[in-house]
Image (cartoon, rainbow, N blue to C red; front, top):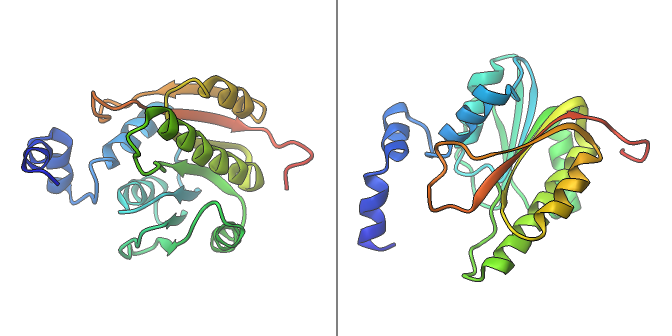
Length: 205
């Protein structure tokens, strides 16, 4: 990490605010802003967070769904324990990870969150393609796991594969929006897909 990067991060408004409020990541404010606008985290709901480390979105989800909710988080990296939240290390592209997520959820989910991001290669077209691939895994998991009427939130890097992917998402959701929270960095090419009103197909398990 360069000294310049560290200085910029420490001067970042949301980084400093996260430190003050004891959130694990400045990304917590992205989910707060998304939920304030789109109401995707219902009280008492069941939530799965894909790519959850270090746990900032888990903290927000826990606050929003309340003590009667059920929250599960998975990541390739270790997630420090969080009271009332089930977490484990796993690869969302692997069937055993999907099975473990379903087991910990103990039933259908109200909301699935994905803030997953590929390792940045320096090639934007490659990073975009990998981002779409991760979103495809999140969408497939949602098709298996969401309750009718449920919600799916995914981070994606904008690019030429987006339109085809969004058309695929629309097959199962009655409402789809693209949203860039204020907490996203100005320099970022990320955008969030907010898909609501899940409609399972006969082929969904």
